[in-house]
Image (cartoon, rainbow, N blue to C red):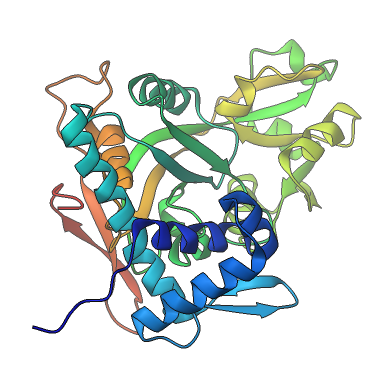
Length: 331
């Protein structure tokens, strides 16, 4: 029988660190070795796998190649399974370790999600949930390119290759300076808002939010497009540059100098989904998704399990649809 070459868990960890740091120097420092030794180790790993280049040096640093990305996908799974195997021997099977990279399409976090994440952190203190809200790249692209593990986003942003379920429902409210004349009312009407200057946020990678708000306000409204993040939008409103629409999650932060009012003549409510790659095989991600579906104590036990959907190609005229799947995830 032909002898198998040995590839250690540390070799797989080296690939993870290189992908994370994108620098041989920084990776060597984190791993406690020299650049020369790390470079030789990487060459040895490539030779063992029969691949010419897992990483390439360029102007943006040491970047992983397409074959390297496929290897890293398996490496992450093997490292996670190795941790679980060691946990079996030590009697700490539920002592998960690792990081979940969670993207937020519409920050900040909804208070209900904050509660769920707090419960997760209490149950799994050796894990970390990193929150990401990039402005320059779409959340869908980050998911598909493995820049993040999961994301909270609107279902319209889903694409083929992603699975999701409805996580919560969000409401739209009006935000204005705290001394604005409309603050004298408990609720406002759309016609009241249309008479004011309204700031509508738009980003370069995704204009769904802007299109939703423009459709809600109608052609009679006085619109000014705002290109920037939510903090700059709130600063604009506080300086009397206009009014805006926002989510209840922002209202619940209670930013000073601002007032929030419900809009009486519309039902401005929409779903937000938790999405992840349909082909994901990461054990920690699987536990996290199951927890967000079923592991929250205050969710009624009689409540039907959320359905999981996968975006699938239908036809050229109707490019994407939803295919319902069972809840058996990451099996």
